[in-house]
Amino acid sequence: MKAAVLYQAGTNPKFEDFDIPIPNNENEVIVNVKAFSLKNVDRMKAAGKHYTSYPSFPTTIGIDGAGILDDGTKIYAWGKTGMLAEKALVEKGKWTIIPDDLVFETASALPNALIGSDTALLYRAGFQPGQTVLINGATGFTGKVAVQMAKLRGAAKVIVTGRNPKILEELKSLGADEIISLSQKESAIINQIQESHKNTPIDIVLDYLWGTTIEIILKAFNTLQPRKLKIVTIGNMAGANITLSSAILRSTQIELLGSGIGSIPYSDIHKYMSEELPQVFQLAAQGKIKIDIEIEQLKNVENVWSQKENPGSRIVIKI
Image (spheres, rainbow, N blue to C red):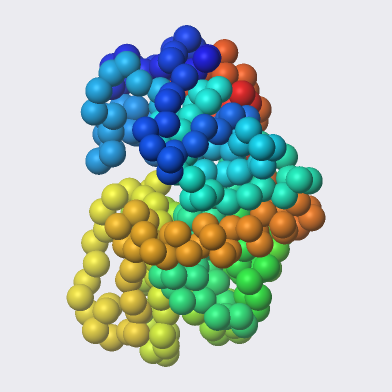
């Protein structure tokens, strides 16, 4: 079979022939992979910078993907072998069925973004319909999905921040009620957040940036009337560290939480994949969730691996 083969951590995978994987037991089955979404975690794992980095080489790579079983069933699954290949092993029954009218490319790209948005909203923030959500750094691929899921889940208001003016305007068509440009002076950002909060109190902040941007948000809430606010950090695109005064946490009702592998129990991820993801796939099939993807071919994987996607989009490799 053709596959993306990694010979050494930190190098780009090569498009080569590789042995078809053989099931080790009755709980493993072969899936014919049709689409694979290239994510930061895939790159980190291949670079040897992730705790699940590959133990031996050569190896096929890729965490998850969308494909079809020999009986014709369309599935999304996490691979027991690399999913960036024509065939991969998956655990029997531990997959999500893809609706007939949802293309493999979309089905491969959505789940990772949902884990970085919808699971954070549901399982870490404890979202309830009618709440107001501020999404800090919403112009990325996952942030755009977060905006749509917050609205579909029943958010009363969705406020977004970001620097890309074109995507900020685009977010209005995806459900954002108010946009806040991070290109403004700090004082202007604080004033806009405070005015918005006075009109419609903010309940949840989903944060993809951390760094100085979250410091600004904390300053904005520090002088407001104490009210419960959950800040859930999911990424650190603006910096891994912040300066935080203990007085802010003592004088407010702010809860700081993280969302990711480790903070979300595997049982919750499994529950999401089995109960929530099928419903989200149906929404996507009905055109109620929109994503931007850039389709590439498996044969070009070595060059694509280092390619930077356009802002707000995701590279999907068609197999």
